[in-house]
Image 1 (cartoon, rainbow, N blue to C red):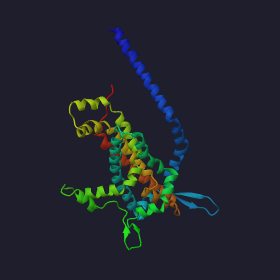
Image 2: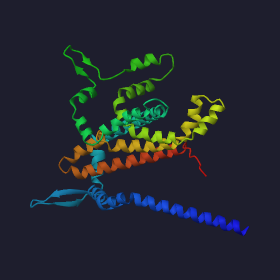
Image 3: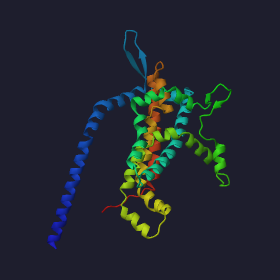
Image 4: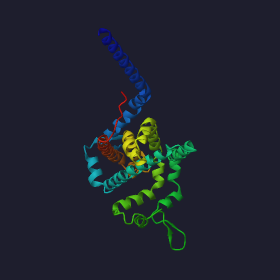
Length: 319
């Protein structure tokens, strides 16, 4: 009996020491980021918050003076500036509509790309190429693409005949014909139409989510699928009873990632508005107030989304 107790204590010590080594390895891995954040980013964050509570007075002899302004910058952004709240609402509405589209598309493509087929690696690379092309200098070049601007213009391209080539791929009438007799509401039809017409941006922003979903799908043991096939489960039942619950943690991760990606992208209307406001006279302090309000709103959205998805997330126990 005493020997068994000693063996259990020895195992606990080994497990504890292994956990400590893993923890030290994790901290060592993120140490460069932590050092860079403390030395570089943290002072910038502090100054940004501080400037949002001041006004800047340019001195005649050169330099500037910070004058305490309290909450006046935030008050001006919310109640004086006529465009900030409108732009903020538009940006948040776009984010709310884009997140489900990206998650559904990336999950659908991940399930397809996880199937056994010839050239599977090539197809995975093809779907990840837009992620590379839509970052850094390539995104800046694309933002100046005149043809892309014409395609995004709702009026289309004038061909000289008095009619314009519509940029929309489909219209609500097309979807209504397809869903005719299925008792589908007009709101869902408009949502599907918007998703189809925005497929270019959805594909561009779904590459990382596809990889995360693929990693989650490949972590599911094939023995589980074999057992349900023996029991006679259909593919539809297998997806909803096995696949979907076991990759639900990845859905939470991708939802948070997509929100943050939407928040930081150059095409974000709110980010563009804040950047333009920064260029105005004395706009740096106003833009700081706008940016921090937007940041807090996005953090609140992430908290709500995380709390919602956490109620449905299934975590597989491996002990």
